[in-house]
Length: 302
Image (tube, rainbow, N blue to C red; front, side, top):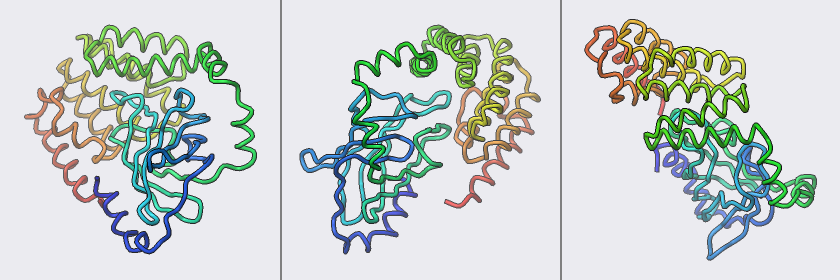
């Protein structure tokens, strides 16, 4: 369990010990993830997704599981994710605090991943309103929804991006590039598809070709008001391409921009360990950049 969850557990341990065990049952709104139907299965709380505007999951996908210890919810939540190199979906541990019928929790995503299902890093469970219950009752069947999604270019683009990210994880870069190309053709607002295409060009030994895609990804991401962490990701990948091209000064300048935009803590692991930066590690400017980033990371409140 990460330090944030441990701290939350310590804050609420005394209250949890004295509080009656809450009940999660029926339809709940779970943050931006969507509407989730809760029930008890084999003594555990299980939540199945009924409707979501943010994540493309199959109907009745189990997205929440856990138990209550007093007033504290201990469990896990499956979220959709965006960000180059991030899995399309991932299950994260969750520690939440119950208040009346609601639960407030905190999810720590692996950097630089983002999830549209979260409000920042927070996730809230609350009972569904009558209107939300009617929405689920009036939804089309799972087959109809699947058919609609199959013909939706935005959904097709999202699926192509997820497949491309998976192929990158498997080092199948040519196939990944084709998936990102398909996504760009389907939806020209998907900056992450453009970024992914640029990443595959670097991996395939064409860093000089990748720069136009990183620049385009940045332009579209800024227009779409992407998060600072995602903007930093684009600058960082541009730097990796410049390193591969032997443009050390340009690469270090891009790395400085990435740190300035996204913060040292979001990039510190890559700056420290990424083998793609090995050609510049002995450069005095890079050493200063890394030292400054490490100092800023240590000063950041835990």
